[in-house]
Structure formats: structure tokens, C-alpha cells
Length: 119
Image (tube, rainbow, N blue to C red; front, side):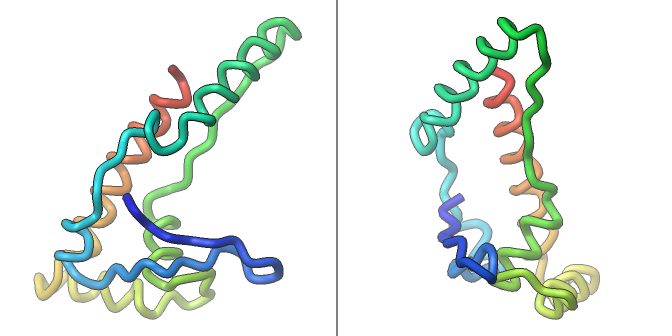
């Protein structure tokens, strides 16, 4: 989705991409996982083979839409998520549908990523 982030020691994920408006969400590009993170499929194929040989299971992981949205909107971990709550309230009143659009976009992308891991 074109969300720029870094993992900072002692802080965790720090996200520089601003998501505050419907236009912010609508302008996020769609990418192919094969194009952007081809190594994930390669690694999972190797791990799957090793898991089969060891007669064990392999599980995948994806983040939840609200968690990813809150991190992105706040720009980092936040106990109070004030900006996220403001967007939720604006969405509820119809003033700004950014939150519901962003959650829908994240949910679709997460589903596709889960399928990518399975393949």
C-alpha cells in the first residue's frame, strides 16, 4: 500500500505515511506481493518443505486491520490512539470516511497476503 515505516530500537514501528483523509486512502497504490516481497514466498516454500520433512505444521501470520490502521494513523505505538479515535468519530458522522475506507483496504490486502502465504 506504499506505507513507509522503520523499526526503531526501543520505540518499535515508526510510520511516516500520513493517513487522514479519504484521498490519502484512495491514493494508496496496490502492489503484487510477488513483485514487492518475492522473498516471502521463497522462504515459506523452503520452510514448508522442511516442516513436511519434520512432520510438523507451519503457520502463517498477518496483522489485524484495526491494529495496522492505528499504527499507521498514529505514526507509532500509542496507548490512547487519539488521532485514530478522531477519525472513527468523523467516519461515524459521515464527515470523513477515511477510517472505514482504510479498514476495508487493509482487510482486503490482509486476506490477499494470507492467501499468498498459503500458496
